[in-house]
Length: 63
Image 1 (cartoon, rainbow, N blue to C red):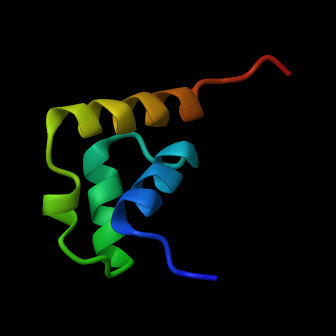
Image 2 (cartoon, rainbow, N blue to C red):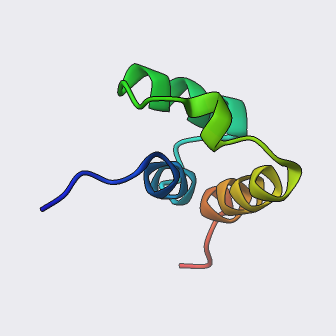
C-alpha cells in the first residue's frame, strides 16, 4: 500500500472529525512530516473544502 499524498492525508484528517480548522490540519501534517504543507494547502478553494469537511465531520448526528 502506498503512502497518501499530502492532499489525500489533509482530506482524511478533515473527515476524521478531530480537527476544527485548516490550520489544525496543517500542524498535524507537519507533525506527520509531510513535505511542502503550506504549498499543498494554499488557495481559498481548497481551504473552503477542508473547512466544510471539518464542520460536517464535527456535527452531532441523530443517533
